[in-house]
Image: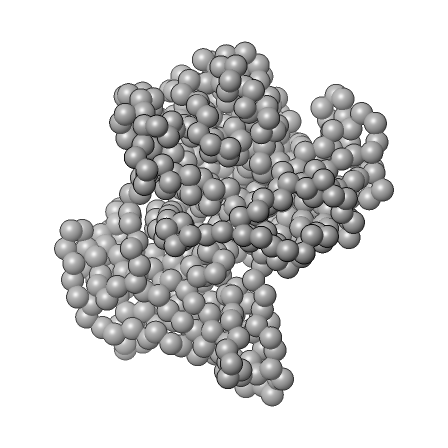
Length: 533
């Protein structure tokens, strides 16, 4: 399924089919750089997972007319986990998710690497799927997306970015902005392209077409999640297109079937961890009936009834595109002609939401034991949607860990947008031929050692790129940062530095560096132009 395989740390740099010995040594153990202080020893920062005993839910409440309901209070909601009532420990009304006061000024930049620019506002991510959508339907979807934007005020209520998935690559069309006209201009300049993998036998389970499209679609989803992870508010992903194909496991061998399942589960976890909610609108003219899917049960019913687009088959309990919307708290709409209105409705639902948090009463974290979440609104006539559950401590096998590792780095190597889950800066180390990779200590997962020191483990990847961004080779190392006893790892000024020497090929014009936290899987990336080339 993979385009690239990252088998693990090596002492070689891979260039095409040629394996060259590394010419320079690597610094495998590095120190934390910071101003000297006499701080008392601070326990290592906890991993940000559900084991922190706090579950955060973004909840959309709608009335019988389908419009968001505002003015609800904490007392209007009831939360259950596995059927057991939970105490709501924090509550944010819809009015609390606001932008900074300066966000309305002309030229305001919304940078995912600078999350303060977003305030607590939600952010809209519009994706035009030209990979899994027939050409005529893509043209229709593009017009409907234009009509949606044209019907919005000149100053959009939330920062919005525009992306597209083409047959061969994923591309950002416009960065985050509140300017309607900027998005319209960018959309007009983006061509509608032919979906070759779909049109040329791509619906058959016996060829690689569906597998390739599934991989590219999931790569795009992970890139979105990893790039926008630091935006503090909810990320509303509106996917306009057919969505990735669902594969019949009987057509795959055992290893491929496991890999597909593990990858789908992994990407779903990443979306949930980064507060990304999927709303999908299928413009396909071949979609039978009128179907709105907001729960896994509805997905089962729709597939059994044949009400979805061609090629959708049950794979497993969570392994299809329509379930992905429901699991993340969103919805999937198929078979409706008013696509622009459905886009508007999806964005509006993502703009008006309540945030609830609770500490689970169940204290054990049985590996792999799924926790089902139910949120009820006690006000009559109000329907709510949110994420459906979580795994408190997923049981991850060695094979699954390798799949996640390989998949993450493959997606990062091809990423069309910078990844910001780990804040990475890169500079050339003068006179050494090496590059210094710098990461804030607060972005890494630290483990306390018996001697009082702490360590953090990362994978560092360098991809050699040509002038046209074609991959020429790559270098991968696992590296360890060590902090001395007493180091305050919660200090935002403290950095971890990793030195990486990269032998260059003659055609190398740019380097893409990626750092992946070994515990959380969070990644950061940075592109660096090679001087003199």
